[in-house]
Image (cartoon, rainbow, N blue to C red; front, top):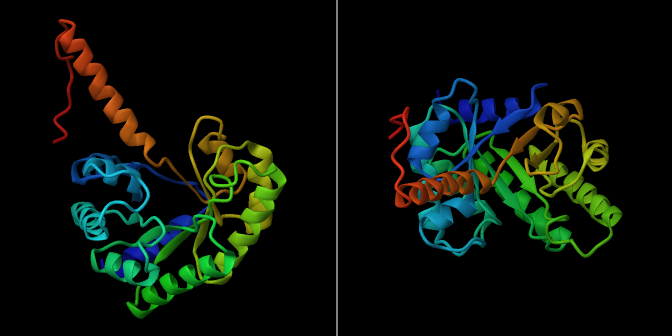
Length: 257
């Protein structure tokens, strides 16, 4: 299967009636562990988690070459489509998407950091154009930080801003619109009504409706960001604490590495 075929499949998964769940990974072994599950149809990288793996803070502090290299290693290690978290594009959204495609990436998140709408649309347009130039139907999941960076604003302002930005990103060629935040069914329904059915993607966090309900509400995709790595690290820390306290390794450890 060519990368164009893989990207087309990732786009199809975003529009299928069944909610697309992507469990975020951060290196090759986490990716292969998730990809081995029969339920896995696609996976996504978490930029926060990859940065942490190399000792960098979140927020485009990691060198783009290092981020893309890890994304490429992940893509080459699995047989399912990989959506990469490319943050805000590392200063050049078009070139970063072009380089990601060269690494075998089928889609990506691209965040707006709540920059002026015209600038954000220009970044989406550049990313879409770069993918088209490579002949890949890239699944661009354009992220708006209306809620993450608009915490001091009234809820209705954030909803309206997310809808305005989401529509603009879709008009610029994005496949879907990622609206991370913690909100309930009413807000989810407003976002779907305003942006479009099977066009909204969310992050699964405590307080966000369960996947089955998100599917009923017309959401396209749910991902989990850096929380998957935090769960893994928490389990490691708990095991270490148990061993330090005189415990032993549990039975049934799976040789996943």
